[in-house]
Length: 447
Image 1 (cartoon, rainbow, N blue to C red):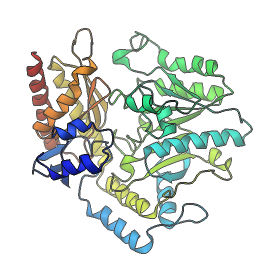
Image 2 (cartoon, one colour; image 1 turned 90 degrees about the horizontal axis):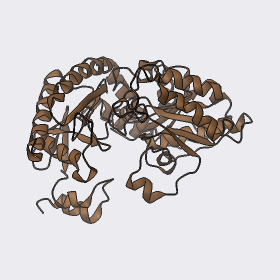
Image 3 (cartoon, helix red, strand yellow; image 1 turned 180 degrees about the vertical axis):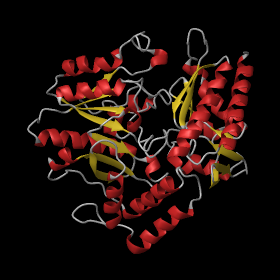
Image 4 (tube, one colour; image 1 turned 45 degrees about the vertical axis):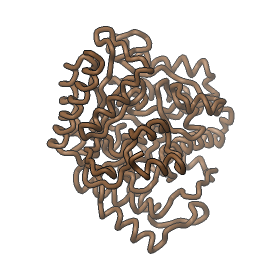
């Protein structure tokens, strides 16, 4: 094996969700440095990062001294104190700053370590609110098929598709049900928008009735769905969802762990659809990945009905993480990165739509700087590649050979979410590499 780091990783380190055979075959690079929107591996190869750190947190690019300095200064002043029974200044300052940015009527925030914890916190918040307002029986959570909400046990229970993690960890937390998704390219009802009249949203009404209106605590939904690759909802979808939730007193949890803080060209993706969440989850771009931090926000009405929030994580409200988030948000605002995401996202999606000339590209979609192309074996009939062919993995490897970081999502989508600092020139470079990667793989397949 060429790299001692790869050998040591096999012997001493659990990589998250990574096939060991890929490490053994040298398909897992050792990343040693980042600068701007590029990363470098230990062999000196440079890659344009079209995935913002691959799990999409990096809004501001690599090597931002402002964030590192804020972390250092806070660590020297007060690196840690408990989130219970005591208050630290950075957490209060960040909560107040976020309250000025939130959509709808959100005011009050709980800080945790990442998006999965934020989702767990949202579930606890919803159930405690119902319990304390004399609705003790409300315990069920509804999410959607193809949804992704994290991988802690509660969040995993809201995962809307089968995968090895879900199967191995079963049985999961009881009390979860799943709504059909607004997946227009592969409509589960075989309907066509807008003639469908949003039947996928109306199905929530019958599902709540089936589960028992007095038993359902909350409905959780990503604004843009991850599980099938950057899937925005059709117009009017969330208006209908909000009406149904209000009809039955079900809290609406909006998951903006990926899209919050500018990725879609708005500070929060909820603003595109005028969604007014009861609870909002966020993480990733809150610190751009410089340190771990997630958050769950709710309205004054809900917060005032929870006199003691029964919840404690050692690293909640962490002072250094909150200081990093404040510095990160200052960069996002000062450099107008939300507006850049809107402008560059439109340009990028136009370029991806041009790639539908490929025989394996069925659709290009996205919102802001979170986009995807649907990969198909038979374009006319929208037939996907069999999972055993591992087409998305081969496309990601081909992309890396041409100097870009891209990834597959679900069984059918190739996904892209570059840092919000991306330029038109860099997007042109990325589109050219994606085009070449598609041709390489198609040639091998005999297209």
